[in-house]
Amino acid sequence: MAKAASGRSRTGKHLPEIDLLPVMNLFCCIIPFLLFSATFLEVVVIEMAQTEGVSSAGAGATANLMRSEEDRLQPKIIMTQQEMFIGTVSGTVHVCYAQETVVDGETIITFPWDSLATDITEVYELLDEAYPQIDFHKITILTVEEMRYQNIIRAIDIAGEAGFDQPGLQVAPSTAVSSAMRGGN
Amino acid sequence: MSAPSKRKVPLLLGSGKSIALSRGGDKKVTLNLTSMIDMFTILLVFLLKSYSADGQIVTVSDQLVLPKARMEQRVELKLEIQVNNSVIVVDGDPVVSVTPDLLSSGNSIPELVVRLKDHLEYSRLTRGTLTEEETKINIQGDVDIPAILLQRVMASCSEAGYATQNLAVIKTETLEEGDV
Image: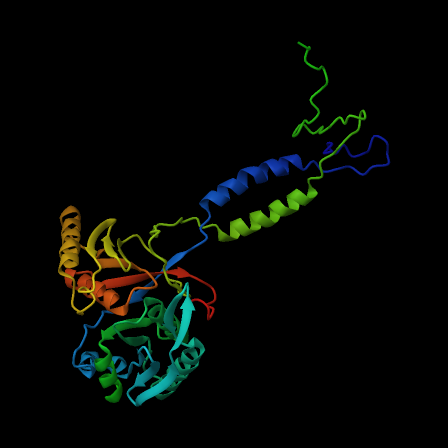
């Protein structure tokens, strides 16, 4: 095989063949190089806004957020081990209930994230419509101490997709979170 | 002892004359490379697409499973804190063991603050001054750590002078409900 293409066949019956061996040699060099240098898992970062300390007074932590109009209006995603809410200046809206999932024999808490995606997008659109002069980016994730890190990241991710791409984190005991929910934003 | 056979070694790969002599006599056996070229082409396109000229500047510990997110912000080389349910590691050195006591309150962690302040002071001494970029820190957290641990680590970073904390995640295009 792989006879050099001379332009005409010796017998005149066979078509000239392209010599694929140089191509193969090239591939054999390139592919191992690319395999060694390929990055299959790309690490990216989420830049967090300054974290708020744990407030034993619950809603007291929100007093720190009254720094600007955007700060005052910024929504909160409130996650407990039982349910999830979105808190705004207008009040607190229930988003969904937590659900238990078994992963590797361990029961973990997760949420139906589509509900959050729908509701947080709606909140963003409403805020954008009501306050066109403000460019909304900030959002606070208020959660209980036991909340799994994956859930926090997932909530941040969904909020970022909706337009709230400057997340902050508040962690508080369950009682304080309940108190914050009763007190609204 | 019998003399070595004078029979020719039949396979001459790469010579352009790949001829194998079968027992039956002279019979030309050609290797069809077309299908292999097809496969290599597909592999090459895939690898070129996933190729990153910048390389990976962050090393993720085997002890961690980073969460996935659809973020785009590229990671930069900063001081790394790795947090899992057993230990908090700063720049490769284990600093604090994660105990139930550690998870009982929400303030900064003194040992971690000291370690981070030392690092910041060292940077200040070696470079003379600190830019805003040098007060950023990357936190690699395991998917299973509780929020209180993350909050304590972040509070420690703030207290030590690292004003901006970046959470490292694995970039993904789509998030499935099963990604828990």
